Image (cartoon, rainbow, N blue to C red; front, side, top):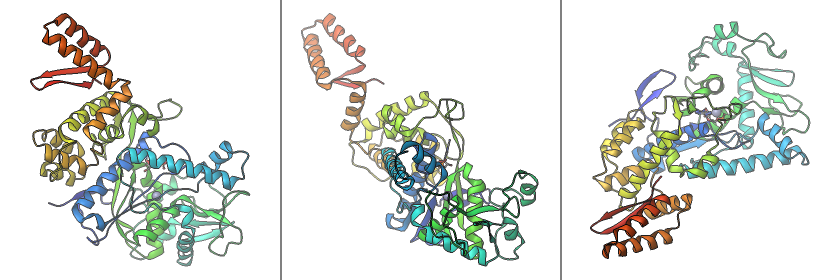
Length: 459
Ligand code: AMP
Ligand code: ZN
C-alpha cells in the first residue's frame, strides 16, 4: 500500500516517495507566540500530527524528522510586550511574552494529543543562517540593499535562466498580474512593487542583530526568511514535505520557495506542499470583532482534548471545517463509547480498514467510519485509536474526568445505587423509581443487567 498526498504545487494527489526512507523530513510553519492560540491554529497542529504519526508507522519512529518552528521575533510580539509590561525594558518584556505564550501553546497542543515535533527551532536562534542565505541571495543577484533594508526581487528570479522554479508557481499566480495589481503606495526603497523584505532596520529599543550584506546598522529579519533558514538548518536544502494553513500559500510559502531555491540553486525546496483548509465557527468566520474567537485554552475547560481532536478529524484536512457545539457533543459521545469498548484493552495491530483511508491523503472521515465498524474487535479498535493519538487515558480516568466536570459525586451515586438495589430486592418499586429519577436529575444514567447496575454521566 502506498501513501498518496495532495500537493499544492502540482495540484494533484501523488504517490509519496521520500528522498531518503531512513530520514523522512517534514517542516510545518508554527505559531507566532504573542497570544493564546485559537482553535483555527489547532487545525494544522492536529492534521500534521496525524501525518507525523502515520509516517512513523510507515517508516519507523527513528526515521522521521518533524520540524515545527516558533516565531519569536515579530511586530505583534513587540506590540504585546509594550502593552502588557510597560515598566520593563522592551527586550525583557518580549522574553516574558514569548516564554509565557510558548508554554501555553505547549500545554494546549499536548492536551490535544499531539506529539512534540522532533525539533522546535526558534527564529531568534537562527539569525546566523538567515544572514547567510541573505548574503547568498545578494551575491547571486536575487536581492539588493536599499536604505538599510535587504529586498528580494521576484523579477530577478524569473529573469534568471536556470533550474529555478517560476516565482508564482506555488500559488498559481503570474508575476505580471501581481505587478499590475500592486498597491500604489509602495515603500520608496523598493525597486519594484513585488519586492519583499528579507531584512529591515530595527526601531530603537527593538531586538536587533548585526546585519548581513555589509549594512552598518543593526536590524532584524523579515518573516519569510525565518522559515527558509530553520528548514535549511534542520532539514537541508531540499526535503520531503512542507505544510501549513492554506492562508500561508501566498505570500509566505511562495517567498520561502523563492529564497531557498535561489540561495541554493535548486529546482525545489520541498517535494510535497500540503495545506489545511480554514476553520470557521457556527457558520461564521472566526474574528475578534464578531466575538466568536475561541481559544484552545477556553475549549479545554469544557471538553477533553481528545474530543477536540476527534472533532477536527471528522473533516478531511483540505476542506473547510465548520466548528459547532452540536458536532462537539457528538464527538464526545463517540469517544465515551470508544473509551468504554477499547481503552482498557491491550492494543492489537491497527486495522487495514483504518490505514487504507489514511494512506489516501489522510481521509479521516473515512477513517472514523472504519473505526465505528471496529466496535466488535476491541483490540483492533484500541490499536487503531492509539495510532491516531487517542486513548491516552484509562476508561476509569475518562469517566472520572467527566464526573469531575459535571460535579457528580461518585461516592454519593454508588450509595444511591446500593439503596435502589436494596429497595428493588424488597420489591419497593416506588422507592427504587424515586432513586432512579433522583439520579437522572443529577445527570446520571443507570443501566441494569444480569451482572448488576452500571452508571455513567449523561452528557
Ligand atoms: P498564525 O499564528 O496566524 O500565523 O497561524 C498559525 C497557523 O494556523 C498557520 O498554519 C495558519 O495557516 C493556521 N490558521 C490560522 N487561522 C486558521 C483557521 N481559522 N483555520 C485553519 N487554520 C488556521
Ligand atoms: Zn513558515
